[in-house]
Length: 406
Image 1: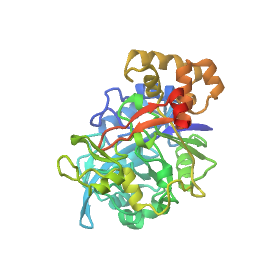
Image 2 (image 1 turned 60 degrees about the vertical axis):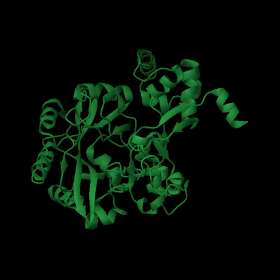
Image 3 (image 1 turned 90 degrees about the horizontal axis):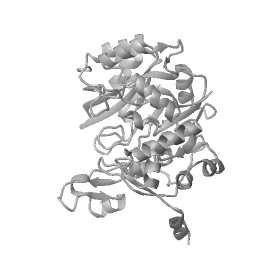
Image 4 (image 1 turned 45 degrees about the vertical axis):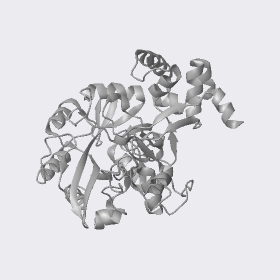
């Protein structure tokens, strides 16, 4: 069974999230997007967990169902602690196969801090100890370092990260099978570092609103069960873990270096030239994902490892429509066009990745059809994101493409 999975999102109980991040609305948007396995997010929050228990139907296979959408129990922990003389701030995504195990996780983690105050709680637990606690509860728990390159809160981030999985997890490194690339990097960037070859590289939306579900996702061809999905990731099985769907990493909030307050956006070369200092205020710039990857890389850009899982880059359909129509993404014109297109073809992911070019050109407004095709071919300009600010895209039109090729 082929399906798309978005395994890292948040609920209405996390800070800075939409009040519409409830199961009913999530299931509706998941079906529009074409995501039929969705992480619940935030199972460590007692109110959200209570809602999940009341609303979701146990499928008996480690997953849960509502309104035709499957859910996997997931949550994110923010660990802040000191190790090897440095303050570490690491986000971890936890997958659990049952409510019983989720309850045991919550009981154990409550001994390290207040997990009830936010859907993504901050607790003072070393992630090595987190792994020890989790795997002591059940070997079926799956632990994934989240958005691994984000400067402030990740395992390899420039501000508080490590230089290897082993330095972070020590003897539990062998029990880590997957890494989440985050919006500001894609598998191609991660392939530049040979130490990551053994891991499955997964991509998720980390969504804080229903509209953002599926902006990154993972496509599997397995039975719909917790064990089948986690086994495919553990074994990095290319027949079962088919590909990931990716943002263009330049669009992510931390792709380039910079200092947002001063409006300084630097490529790694510009950062080096300025000795990591903002020329406006004299303070250090935030070192972004591209720079940090190049620091640890031992291969050139473009290298493809033998056992790599492929990926497809895309731009969300509402952004494409907004670019073509020339209005804001949240406008009524974009919503109307989106509502006409998606039901006609089935799901948003089908429109963006699977419907043939001929069919798009025959059955969509010409400008939107050509824009989708250009995105598939990478014919876009992006002003890269930096220091917490998303990048901005411009989809190249036919005249621009002609000028570019001449």
